[in-house]
Image (tube, rainbow, N blue to C red; front, side, top):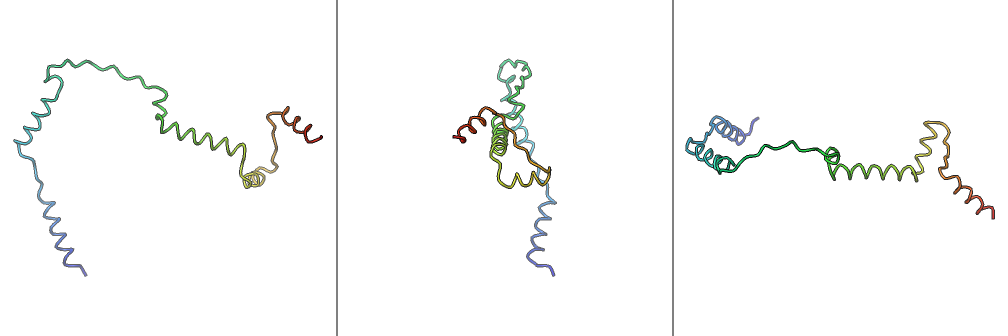
Length: 118
């Protein structure tokens, strides 16, 4: 069953959709006159042709908002690369087999070995 309040509301909306109000010609003429008065040519100002703006690499990246996202992703990647969570090594060994340890600073590892030997 339909609610009588809703049918009254539907009838009211249908009547509102049937009417299409249009602005009067006097209002439109005033709007056009105001717009023309604000144009540079109507005020006697010379309008210079604009040269196309050069788009910098910074603007192509999207400026500060985009660069902050790239920086955050880079920091997170470095962080996970240097100090990965414990579960990552297990997942990597399950997926790829054996895990390997790579030393980028061999002299530092030798120095640590000498310190631990006594």
